[in-house]
Image (spheres, each protein chain N blue to C red):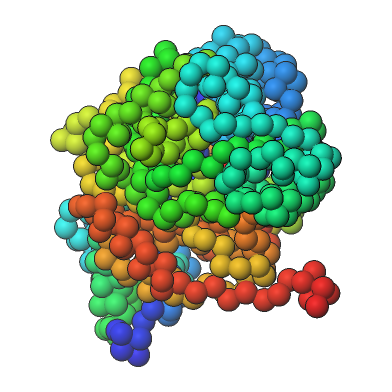
Length: 427
Length: 204
């Protein structure tokens, strides 16, 4: 009988296709659990499950009940919230996974910084404020430049740099408004706080890794060639391999390893954002999940034996194999450089049309242009927005060529937006 | 119409499968599926695509103005796609049909696609469509060939972030349970054209 994986897929994830395809390639039995019921759940009770992903204990209870009739051999979360639920389920069922306190610490930016600072991992100086505090008073004691962050939101949503008191007060108000939106406020106490931290200058990288028994295997180190200096921190380009000097790359990996250990993470994927400058390496954030969006398509791992017809593997296949305790074919990324552009939100408005997709795909080295926004969707820029309109992928011999190709492809795209209904009323 | 006027858009589904949307129809007679070079014999488009060197083409589905190609080689779609595009343009440049009409299975045919079609159509009508309708979706049975079901999703399912879960964990499971003779499921939906997906991805 094929081993069964319980895959925690929130209905808002970009990761569905990649994980479902990986499970099919590995020929494992798959149960998909989401926070909302599938219309097929009653007809296919082995394959589909509804779990309260926001309540790890309840999720673990329900998963244990399910496992009595359908034994589960691995549980995998795909984002920050499901990483905690996966840890709780793994603990309950005795499966490979992270301790719940470690997953909780990784998800909450304040708890994470406290744990890292205590362990001596270099993190920005930080302080936590309630959203009902008076920003005019707080602004007097803040060291500038600083960055205001929500504790839980992802994709740089709500992250704002302030260089002086006036900017701080404005940013505080803007972030407070985001945290007061009903869908955000629903997450409870974390939405009632704002983290204010020192701005760390210097280039930023993203490290993709896999933890096995606490040891970090670096799967890829992505440069982020577009400077992330604020006032908002929109992710755009990721290109690997990194062009940073080898000693800096080793130092970044060591910092990520130290951070994982400080948080108590021991198994599964990690995605870390780090900076490097003349003062050393800095851990900005570390999450117990794989890279987000559709970006994992930028990663391929060498087949152990291409001669036997084995194909290069995806990140999702590695993650599922690791969770199941299956042999890992290779943790070495393909030899070519690879990159992805998370297409910046072109402005606020309802998407009418995307022009130039064929022209963008025709750029040499570009492998794909994926538009994930749908016609009629309201696009909202950062810091309020949280959804990329699409992704561009490229591969080539050198990272600089990949970067150039991604920029050229993006230049050929144009987004036709109409004012949203709400915006029309505002006029 | 000259070859230069034909517009082709490649939409890779993953590293193995890619859809090619063509600005003019390739095959008006329903759906044709080819699972080997032998089956492609007599259909110029299919012959040309199976003959792409080093691509390891394993399957080809032609329906209206949509061509779905499946390969097993690691060669990226950027490289293979250009050759597929050239094959499509060449096939459309002649007056001959791009694909031959489907041969009806004889008495020795291993599966009876017509009988399967009826069973699948009933399953879709009685069980599958009422289920997806709860999310504003619909499932259209396009054809059954060699026991492989080809379908198109619509409404809330078209472009939905959870469409693969619906397909693989829902519909495929029901087909396996109720009609075990079905050997596979191919989604020929143009998901990029969906304008009202039930679930849309929105975070990391």
